[in-house]
Length: 53
Image (cartoon, rainbow, N blue to C red; front, side, top):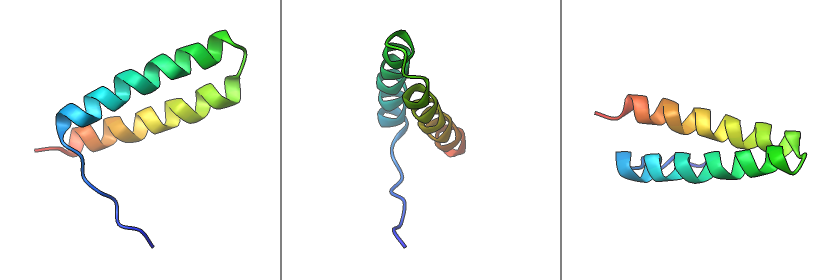
């Protein structure tokens, strides 16, 4: 079982921006499954960001 590495808030915000752009592109290209997977990753990062001190 792998341990999850905590990221700093700036890294999380950067990842959210990048993944959001990729999800938008996937939707435009007609790849809803890819977009949904990226949105789930974004949700996980937002949850992690909410847990940051």
